[in-house]
Amino acid sequence: MIPKKILIVEDELVIAEDTADILISLGYDVVGIVPTGEKVVETVSMTKPDLVLMDIMLQGKIDGVEAARQVREQFYIPVVFVTAYADKKTLERTKLTEPFGYLVKPFEAQELHTTIEIALNRHQVEEKIRFHAEQEAALKKQAQEESERQAQYVSMVSHEFRNPLSIILMSSELLRHYNEKLSEEKKLQQIDNIKNAVNMMSQLLEDVLTIGSTESGSITCTPTPIEVNEYCRQLVENLQSTITENHTIMFTSHGDSTSAELDEKLIYHIITNLISNAVKYSPQGGKVRLDLVHTGTQVVFRIQDEGIGIPVACQAKLFEAFHRARNVGKIPGTGLGLAIVKRCVDLHGGQITVESEVGVGTTFTVTIPLENGCRRVGEEKTN
Image 1 (cartoon, rainbow, N blue to C red):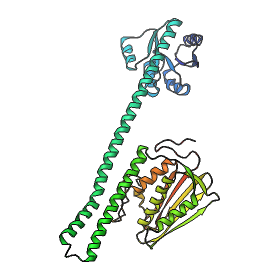
Image 2 (image 1 turned 135 degrees about the vertical axis):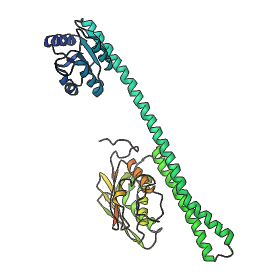
Image 3 (image 1 turned 90 degrees about the vertical axis):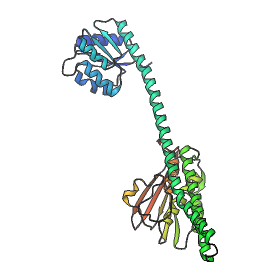
Image 4 (image 1 turned 60 degrees about the horizontal axis):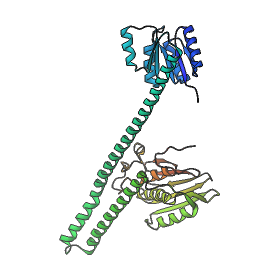
């Protein structure tokens, strides 16, 4: 068993050395002798004792009571007071520091041993109680934050549903009351409005379910071998077939390796959301580039567009759910795409960065490590 470390604070050197000899004979490790209160905090910080044996009457401006208070507040290390005598006022002051024991000089070795062991045991019990209390408080805070986040999602989703629902209601009312007066072109336009609104709602639901699943742990990172080049090429072809002729998606690949262990579902969310955003926020058309770099130890996806760009002031909250840049205008969107991307990148243990200039374009860079990358959202990455 590792001996407990004791720090002696005593201005009488002979008494301090005698006490040290007793402690050593009892099996303790004396980590130092401090003669003044001014040096107590510094010595405790350096030696990290398990207990401080503190004389109340010390020379200098800081007596043992004040030194004990500082130790208690900064380190939460048990202090046992030692004194030959003390007035009532001083004794009342010692109570404020919540000491773990009190010894009157002169004392016997057994008395010293018993007092120290009781103090150490009490401190151990208090540490366990404090640990469980902190755990309970952390869980309570986590539950409260989760509840607030869910309430926020419900509120925001309700708000986002109003627009497409209003469109559906308005178009259906027009068709109902003015069907005979509307031209075929106008009828088809109202039907298209309803269809687009339904698609918006479906996408919103899918995005909310996806982001909720990543936060609840329902979606985890399960890497499997993927031919990354071919996967990206096929994904680009599929996306190109769904966009207008004004946009061109270009794919380039760098590196000798082609295979990597990645979670295909998460990679799909990352690439499709970033490319879809690149197309959406390039209303005048242009090129969208997907560059793949495979170094053997990491995979880098770089998505670049020639769109409206993102104001610097909006970039700090870019990956928060329902956040949209202030310059998007009437371009439709839920503000969930980048939040989903960020969570999928986090699940891979990767990083995502953005470089953007308003009116020039935006580049997102996703870097995913290939060794021990996958982890839970919020979990610290280990080396």
